[in-house]
Image (cartoon, rainbow, N blue to C red; front, side, top):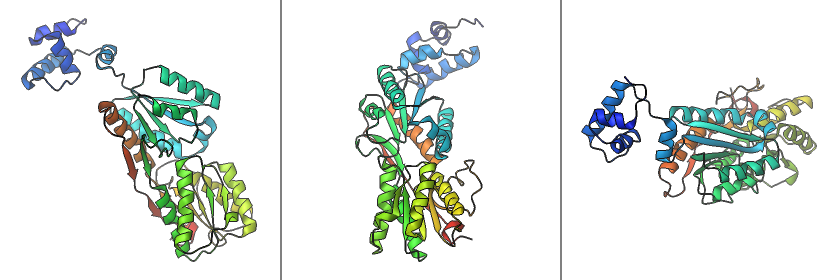
Length: 342
């Protein structure tokens, strides 16, 4: 068969017009079944491969999705949450025939330049933004006409579509569990308070104490900002105030908390109980051996990535649809670090 097949030649072989062949290739709904079958049979018999660039022009889509993580590149490779999230996103893109473009940067200046570039160019069908924080230059992308899906609720943009977990309820569950075990002085190491996850997990900690008539001691609240070094230092800052339990707002930070307690000569859970948030071990991420095994709040990180892609593709197909707000469940996973595990 002629290697220079065109839509006109496919149409001639199928007895239809070039426009009809184009509509079949681009999955237009208003095609009679028998016509669609005839065109597809000719395509199968000739081995015709539609030109992707031409299809993109015809459908106004490129099949290219962008993933932006608005944090400096060091955080991308030190926070164990992100590899699992990216794995879920890339798997969903592969399964749906999309190409994923990952945007990373080193400084705020690069973030500003990237924002201007993405808003100016139309080569992406849609965007996924993970880890958004207040005041970031990339937040402007939520005001563009480009379909955007956010991982983590953007509290300052209620019109945005997002997928998240109930961070506040997860924190309430964690702290209430520690209270049920008899712990009296429960501290917390918070995440970034300019991000929804950090704010909501801190609020859940406070709400759990209030619900159980426990006093709020500001000395037992330190900032970790989802960074391992800060979590280590924050743990040491807590020790003079003699906490008997610590709720840490992420598993990555909890690893540093365990290390700081060990360096201070304290045993977990005998001296201080620890509960994290993420359950990276169950998510299949390569994590260091945790001793003792970490009690934590499991959030479905991989599933969030898959859900973000599925919802974004739906937004691309249905641009007039209302914002999508997907909240996935969390689960308390009890292990040895809280003192109640096997």
